[in-house]
Length: 509
Image 1 (cartoon, helix red, strand yellow):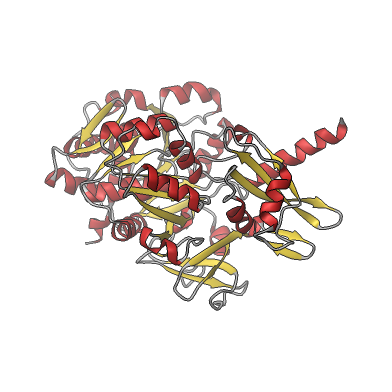
Image 2 (image 1 turned 90 degrees about the horizontal axis):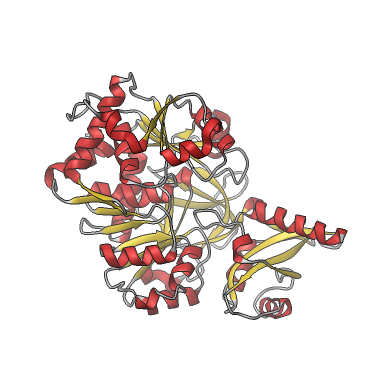
């Protein structure tokens, strides 16, 4: 029965029960479940004809498109392992990732092959734009491969924001249970049409929204390049029911001048995560789309990825939290020795459940550092849990600021300052200080047309924060200079370097 948990089986099952139903839509085409299954079979059989087999690693380098998903499904139907690549990295980093994963073949779009050129390693390549030529003559029948739930389905490389990127191995079973969690706890159903506005190489788009829909037999609409206008137009044109965005993208959407002129009546669930969503942003979303339900979620790739959800009906119970554990998840707050802490105490967030990764590819030491023998995953995130199971996220441990011998959790400060009506984005970092060791510093992007001075923001913080938490300095940045990655997270390491470089240049003048 474990074969029923595999992604290939889900596509086959829905090809039989919904053969003529639209499975995927992109700006250039749409494909039914029957055609998705047969085309993926041809990819699998073409790979098999080249000697690709169970456990072989196959890399994909492309923006989101229907054939990206066709290739992915074909790879995993064969029992091989997909290695999605972040096309926003430089050529050297992409080459390193391909070599680290031991991929034996690369599917690559023509534009990226031309763009990266000689930086790509000398392995066999298949140009995605010419996929028909690759599968020409390949059988349409189901591949002769034994694929079970514990087989590795995908290796997703972490963003590298904490050092060298690591390949997270997720099995078919991990992905199946992640889908089940999302389906049950957020009310997904086969009538959905979800919009994938973030890249498929990211765990949120692939694991949390594409795969549950392939399991249900729902529809997924792909947006290869996000702009707020394109997303709004796509929701209206394709009658989209739900989507995921980080808070920064959400703000781009609801502040866009066409937002109030667009028919968003079919859009019923807005998934948001990867940053702070203040109450005023939630209110703006609800005013724009009456009746929409916001699901605020937290997770990390190693967890499959989603671990907690703050549901619409729970918001007032714990408005500053990241919600409670998903139905098949356990969460505890622990000290440095792995001992559970009492309600309200701050410690490391630890996770356990059937979605937790198998480990890091070829990194047993790194795996042992974060994954205990009893299945608990150390996240490196600091948080606390109340008596009702709601988890509050305090900070990444590496982003915690030590000022005057006291710990300051940057996200707690960001949570407060984000409520200032003039602030669009805010990142809190510690800058070197002779007096304080580190000086709490707010890096702020203001809304277009807003006027505010540093002292206004400091005073706003002082009224709502302890003295040691209140920023001692405010630095303004244009939105385009704030280092925000594709999943909406402010890259604190990059931000700190940007500000230090800027201050150094000012001191030399």
